[in-house]
Amino acid sequence: MPRKNNQRGTSEQVSDLTAGRLSVYLRSLNVLAAAGVKTVSSKALAEQFHLNAAQIRKDLAYFGEFGIRGVGYYVTELRRQLRVILGLDRPVRVAVIGAGNLGMALADYPGFRQEGFVVVAMFDVDRAKVGRRSKGGVPIQHIDDLVENVKREGIDIAVIAVPAEAAQPVADLVVSAGIRAVLNFSPGSPRVPPSVKLKNVDLTVSMESLSFFLARGDDGQE
Amino acid sequence: MPRKNNQRGTSEQVSDLTAGRLSVYLRSLNVLAAAGVKTVSSKALAEQFHLNAAQIRKDLAYFGEFGIRGVGYYVTELRRQLRVILGLDRPVRVAVIGAGNLGMALADYPGFRQEGFVVVAMFDVDRAKVGRRSKGGVPIQHIDDLVENVKREGIDIAVIAVPAEAAQPVADLVVSAGIRAVLNFSPGSPRVPPSVKLKNVDLTVSMESLSFFLARGDDGQE
DNA sequence: TTTTGTGAACTAGTTCACAGCT
DNA sequence: AGCTGTGAACTAGTTCACAAAA
Image 1: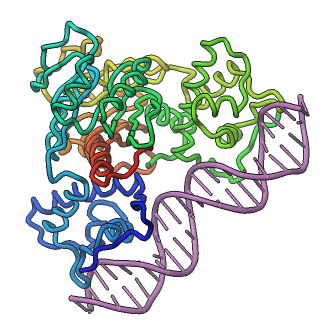
Image 2 (image 1 turned 135 degrees about the vertical axis):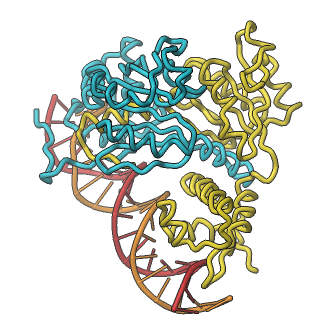
Image 3 (image 1 turned 45 degrees about the vertical axis):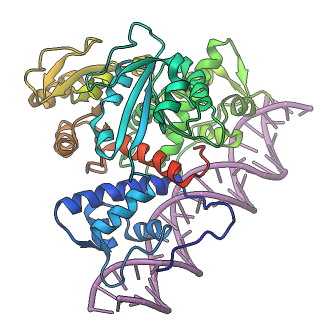
């Protein structure tokens, strides 16, 4: 069973798009596994979930040869493999920075808990909030205690949900605490060193894109 | 002042990426305008906000000739133009479907109000919630009243924040109400007709992408 | 001189199409 | 026969580099 090796000494660059699709494939496989499906071909997977068969095969082939020619992929086996590839074979520990409406909602978001993410703590500047908990029970700590907490709790990912002007200092703080992956909901993109993976979710940009397409009268479909 | 005309009879296809960047440019111009800056070159804009100068020019040139050679762009004038292009020269009316934690947070999200979006109403299946309001005062209505309300209130954009299994029926309902732009926060992508513009914000995919990069030990930077 | 607007060159990402394995 | 894994072809998106305008 040949496992693909990197040609360059440095680790192979996998695009963000591919990473996102792996997550989509895993979700699709969860559905199939729950339905008791044993094997699935890239074509069947593509048709059922509106993906492209060749792309599924290419994305997966990047990490090894998981399929069987003439058969397809074993659903539970591929699912297990994808969970390892995505780092979901152990709990991923998350902190949410900013205990406002959005931060609270994110801390309790059921979709996170589902695939093995654990929101360990929230942080805020407002001392009146410190000691309280989200509805779901996530405790709020003071941002001054972030660095210490991150180390003690072994936080993997920081979710930033603070006002725009606080985003850069918070990002700096989070980076200084040794966090290497950040999901940012504040508008704009804070600067982080290249060793830190940053993903921005910009709600204003999303809404304005929609408004743009309405204004144009263009056809939709992402 | 030549205004670029479309070469094909059908309206020119502008990519989603371009649409998103226009929104980013507008935000940058807002900052410059607030700072009292009168003119800005694509190079200066690019350097200050970490964009690419040629791309800014290309994106803008798509809609007309807004710049002056040797000078750059007039900040307030370009800002005004961008607001028109993005359809922000009149209020954009928004409904949020799903009055859970996330829906409530989105309804009150200050970033929306800022650039001219007005969240008019929320909708939920839970009759216990109907008649109540978000902290910010957005009233919750029953989902059965959605179609009628959308027409009466002139809703432009629907934001879907419902559990995964409800996403498709809600999308169908919203489409049947005549809405042409949807921002979907539910996992997976509901099917909508090609005349409807759909944007998905998939929090699970975002988190799993980050987890993937952590698991790989790759370098980050989006 | 400065900076736009834009064709040309380049880079990234997707889809096709088929050899080869089961 | 069926389906994977993958090079080749294609499509989309970005950046370069420069002629033309102010």
